[in-house]
Image 1 (tube, rainbow, N blue to C red):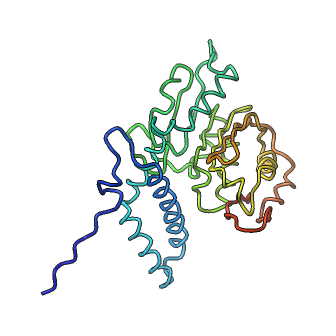
Image 2 (image 1 turned 30 degrees about the vertical axis):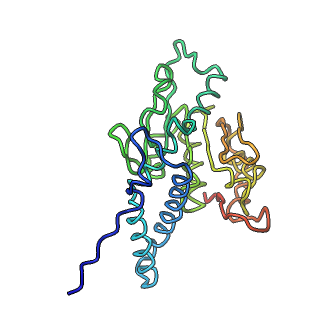
Image 3 (image 1 turned 90 degrees about the vertical axis):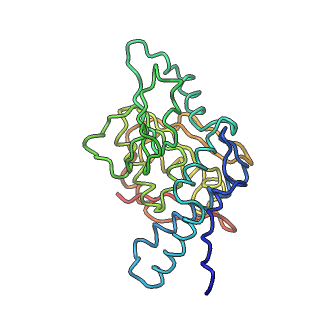
Amino acid sequence: MRNARKKKTPITLTEKHHPTANGSSNPHTTRTLIRRFHVLLKKQRQLQKDASSPSNAKELRDVEQEIEHLGGLAAYQRMSSIGQGGDRGGGSEKVLIKWLVGMGLAQRDEKGSLSLLEVGALKPDNYASCSSWITTTPIDLRSRHPSIIEQDFLSMDVDEHTERWDLISLSLVVNFVPEPKDRGRMLILAHTFLRPSGLLFLALPLPCVENSRYMSFERLELLMTTIGFAEVETKWRQGGKMAYWLYQKIAPDSPLKMDEFRKKSVCREGRRNNFCILLDC
């Protein structure tokens, strides 16, 4: 009689890869796992659109098996949370807070606190140090904490949220949306949800803009202006990993300019990634 095959332990749960009690783990391992999860989850969503095809169904099973082998979504969220830990320099909220303080927005007096919608929140207390002047509503597709609302930003009620928020944070969110048109829709919804002169915080991996076949800093600036955002602050460095922007809501540009972003337009040739943002409205 053949011995029963022993089920493999997910590699993210082995002693080598499991974070220690203080939240630390090997930075290279964490980044590698996060990138692999991004690829697999994007592929999973694409295949789920046509799972009736036998070839797609088989590929989908293979993808889901690999996701399970890596520890599942819980492992991905844990790795992402570690990436925001204090031993890694903290999360991107530090950049936003510094900019807001520099703009004098921490001095609220009798204006009341700023309402912040934090999309893709992995921790509920990113803005706890600013609770006297920022009221935060953290949301995520799959909440891993009772204080984080489980909500798909793209499915939020437009009538309920139109011009409701002073601030919206899209930190490492847009790049994770599988479809380029949904990325554009996310930015348009952010514009709709913000109050007049409201602020949008956008954070992307630097290669999404610096090394994309279809995106560049200049094209992103034109895209955001077309939607109705004026750049207030930006931060990135050559050879860095992240890029940050702070935009203020303004009136949208001419609807005719939307046509330029309805299909992919090549910005660079050579070995590049395929990140892009399209508008379909």
